[in-house]
Length: 161
Length: 205
Image 1 (tube, each protein chain N blue to C red):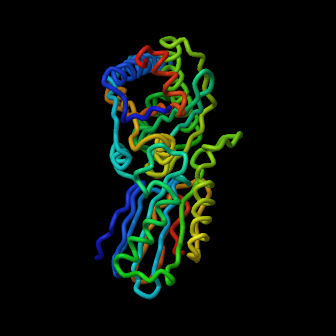
Image 2 (cartoon, each protein chain N blue to C red):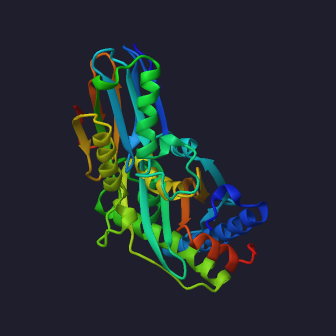
């Protein structure tokens, strides 16, 4: 039994093979999983908001898509990951509550996904698979040995992406 | 300038706590009128928690919970969320409908009853707030979701997250006979509204 390394809200962590990174109950937040296909070094960041700009209290880098992903890549390289071998898988960004007038804040899940994709594109990190949107929560597990991402839900089954 | 939960002083917290108290008291009265039974409540606890500890309140991020969400508009804007674990939710609907359904699943009747309870709780809280502040406040119709606690909580946490790293919530326990129902209540004023709220309550210069 391999130990699961838990990543909380606005938190990040890295591991070497065969470590498993997990984050429980992703809602409108987005879990960004990075995996170096050569060294198998992997990282997971659980971001809450799209951008650290215009936010007064932005000292926690893992809270935002822009700063979180950049920091995670740095942390992975520090423990030996190869920058040009990193791929990504993303999950989350649901809209948990429905209202007829979808105000800015209700669409935060979608905005998190859009921001995440923009940052990954800017960093030239390919997104190989994703399970985003919808209106349900997700628990994810990233297996560093294989790069497989397991997505568990309540009522929507479990899948590997 | 915006104020985050971290910066509140003890007087401001006490005032918010007292509103919670009055609101929960009114809610208990309304509920007990509805079912013609006496409902007691414990003194509400106001918790200020770091994000990572919030889900533990309801048994961890993967526990199935019911969240009922409202938007607040008027002189201040923001959101209200009522949260309870699925077991408590079922107990509450059993209590309201005077039955003893051992089944854990919630049917359409249960969901409708829960939305109504959400309405009563939020309405009671908002009306005590409105009376105390003279602010004009109204709320939207409820939106209900049942899912993992982490996912449901991501909504208030993100709203609070725009200004700080903590959330404030009011924990209220309702009791009737052998029924014991634990509910959590989040009031999340939008960024500029927190200041207006505290000023109206006379606890901010």
